[in-house]
Amino acid sequence: MLAAALAASLAAQTLPPRARSNAWPRLELLGQTGFGERLSADLWVHRAFAYLGTASCGHGVVPFDVSDPAAPQPLDPLLTDPNSTAEDVMVIRAETPNFRGDLLAVGLQQCRQGGARGIQFWDVTDPRRPERLSFFQTGTTTNGVHELYLFQRQDRILALLAVPGSDSRGAADFRIVEATDPRDPRQIADWGIARDLRDVPPGSGASRSLICHSAWANQEGTLAYLSYWDRGLVILDISDAVNPRFL
Image (cartoon, rainbow, N blue to C red; front, side, top):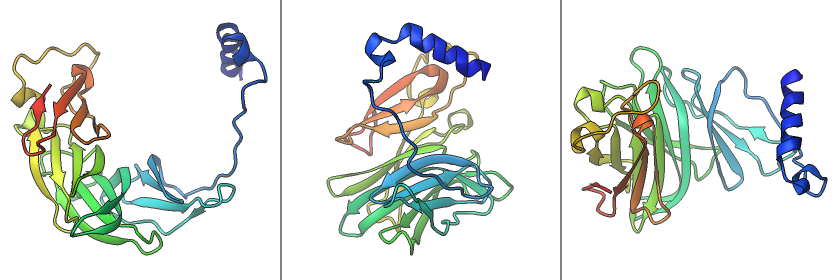
């Protein structure tokens, strides 16, 4: 209570007059629901459904019907792997010669011995009847896919993967997987700051970590933005997805 009171007092002193008045709209809780003992992670909303990734071992992805925001309804979970977490999720509408519908990508990280480490693809065109399409393994020397970005560029579906720890093991933390046919994904490129960039600047943070934590693309799908922890932001030209180029 004391912390809340101090925060409110500070906000009142620093915000402009309009922000302190009642002229700004208020946030209102419309609805809520529980999802058991699962530890929540990433959340992605597509059409009238929300997909909740979980950081609890083996709990998969929990879809919710949010067509009525006042009464969100959990659906049966997508059980990804009993020994992995499913923390990062993303859904897109995709249309290629090999697939047409709503495509879910899930990043898996090992949380117990023998857990899956990589990316899973699911057909969630009917979220009540999801179909597992494939799994792409990123290797057994790292923990798996921490974060990802899925998009379609022209007639190709591409997934950008952050696989932390690969750089220190002679591989590459950033991977590009083509999922134009999501039943048969394949890696087409990778990039690592230690391997592909000379004179790497030292980190400025406390941990001095050399890991790719996350990956994202611009709207056109021609640039990749990599969050490289203490090494800062790395921008790659991926207009030629097979040959990422450092910018």
